[in-house]
Image (cartoon, rainbow, N blue to C red; front, side, top):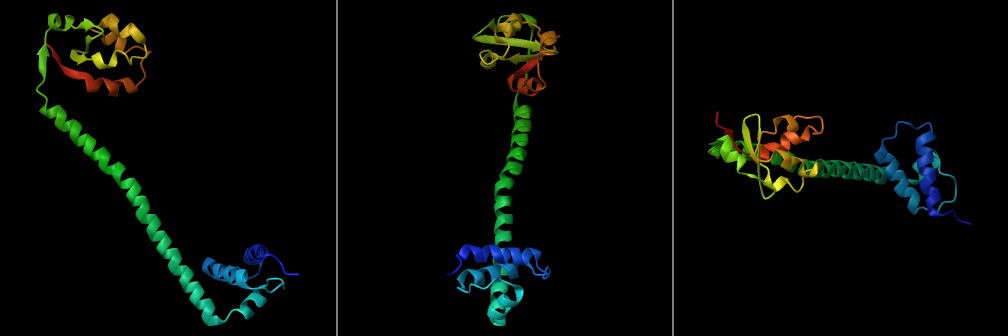
Length: 184
């Protein structure tokens, strides 16, 4: 009766983990496991039985091959991680540059309060926050507070904007709608 090949695999790992030969590098264990899988020997796998069955030249080749495979795997893994992470760094730098260039290229207009007050509808909604004018028309339908944004349409909504109901992310969102300053 022969043992199934999986037993050799388990025995080889068990031997490598609990035997006195703790100095074996992982590549050596890989070579032993590889040899154990192809042998039909039913004797228990011990360090002496495995080492006596594997010629030194074959063992050295297997260890060196395993080391080469491990180095190649590490290099490929490193390159793949760079490939996956690099776009994130470049993208964030590019978006910052685009935002700065957009802000610099926009010719900001100054609006008076009467002009802003004309934009007080759902389809044309401007608001004033700290003497800055924002066209929030595209955001009206998405506003989590519903029509509360329309209560200040065409008017100063600084108090409502800085109230406790707004999360901090709203300060980042509002910059996208900036169109100019309020005339004093």
